[in-house]
Length: 226
Image (cartoon, rainbow, N blue to C red; front, side, top):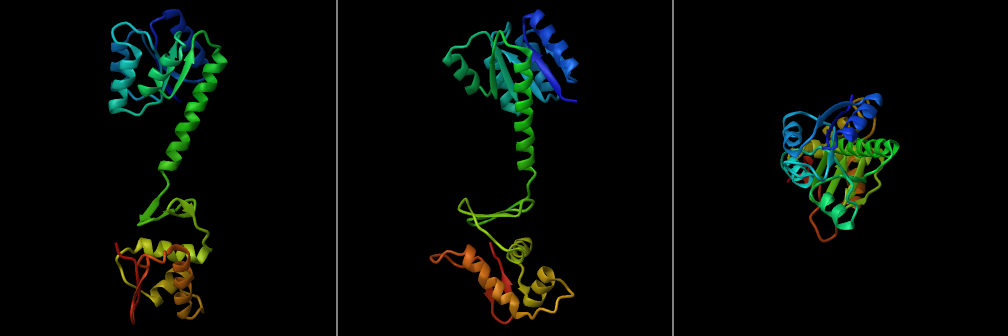
């Protein structure tokens, strides 16, 4: 259940929002002035704040700024003031969106859904395990490899070889170890296939003017070193 904090001094409007959002399945908290709203915002956990711009005690811009100093809760600014400068001020203070009174409840619900979609996407991106070594970034869950921000197409074995090196940074890996980790213990592939695939990988990620990402340890194997 999503928790929504409504900070709105117009009691009829705040009651209307509260009832509508409860009907939609949200858990609601309500504050009628800026100071109480800020206290509730900072002391409790919320999924989004609906924040009026003109509030007694502490205006919405200041509430938003203070919340932003310690929390990253999405803030949807609600106000009757719809000038460009008012919108800019609200967004610059840290608001994620802006809705102007009077509004239809369907629009408010749609804005809330959009905020939650963005939040879910950000959380999903944040949960992706990434490796970064020099100019190469690997997003492990999506199996994407980027160099200087541009995606590099790797085969499955090339990708597995690269992530094996990244998982074992600064550790010298023999050809036998690489063969077992990337091709499997039961493989009948000769160890020189490792040399072939290291060459393939170097051709895709190395730059002519830079040292190779994968260093050769003569007589032993290969290593990635920071």
